[in-house]
Amino acid sequence: MLKKKAAFFKAFLKKGNRNGSVMPSSIFLCRKMISTIDFTQAKCIVELGAGEGVITREIVKKLGPDTQLFVFEMNTEFVEQFLQFNDPRIHVIADSAEFLGKYLSEKGIDKVDYIISSLPLTIFPPELKEKILSESMRVLRQKGVYMQYFYSTIVAKYLRTKFRNVRMAYVPLNIPPAFVYTCQN
Image (tube, rainbow, N blue to C red; front, side, top):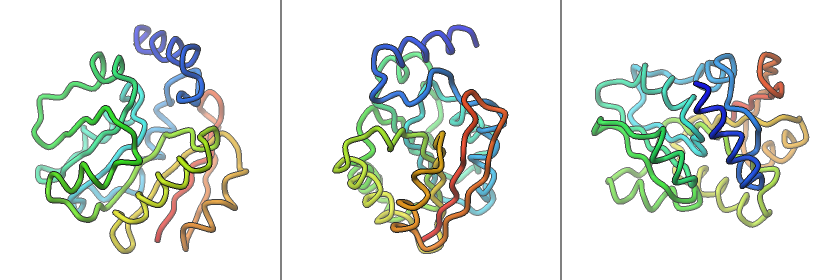
């Protein structure tokens, strides 16, 4: 655990523009982020910005036998050290979330049930943020769920321009405290 926290903090110092936090998500934030997933019905789940995999591991614990999980993380050190799974249902991709559709298409998947995002979209260039959200909306099935956390409420208005239904929950037991947005198209 200490190794993961140290690696996460080192990545923040090195790549603060891609790592939005100094610490991995708390178990409370992880549980909130996956709380809407119906693991008995989900066929495809996508995680954007897995970091060292704290949310990923919570998803994997509950993953259905026929559910595919696509995990996007650009930090190759995290991918090599923390995101190795010997499981054909799990696809770890060391590339940008803006190419989500390309990787899904390669596996014959058109639509996904859930997208769980830890990406620090508020610090991304506007065009990259727009590409990632547009691509996420394009691959999300009707009534699919997009979960995103931030450390402020300033993005609520932006998310409401993209999604029909946006709900917010506060998770105080995290460093820093977080706001979780549950969005539906």
